[in-house]
Length: 101
Image 1 (cartoon, rainbow, N blue to C red):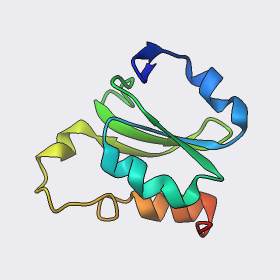
Image 2 (cartoon, rainbow, N blue to C red; image 1 turned 90 degrees about the vertical axis):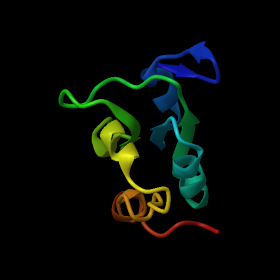
Image 3 (spheres, rainbow, N blue to C red; image 1 turned 180 degrees about the vertical axis):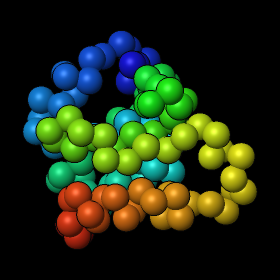
Image 4 (cartoon, rainbow, N blue to C red; image 1 turned 180 degrees about the horizontal axis):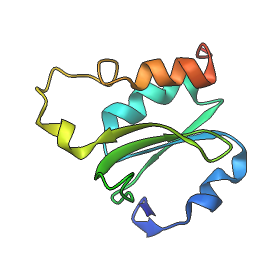
């Protein structure tokens, strides 16, 4: 995986003990900002397949469990489909509670 143009291992990113949002999409990173105390959003240009599906965003719990993924095939959805509509907000609430403002 690459973050900010440089290769980095997920294990290095998870050293903070926070959840990780690994995303190729700035909209998803913006959605996670209210949870910044609990989730690190990392912009990446490359994500591994999940269960054989190409993905462009992953939400990973601190224990390493992937609790949400967005399939790259969903990119065919209309542009008005926001991260709220694709389930990211629900997963952030479920696994990390109410955001800190």
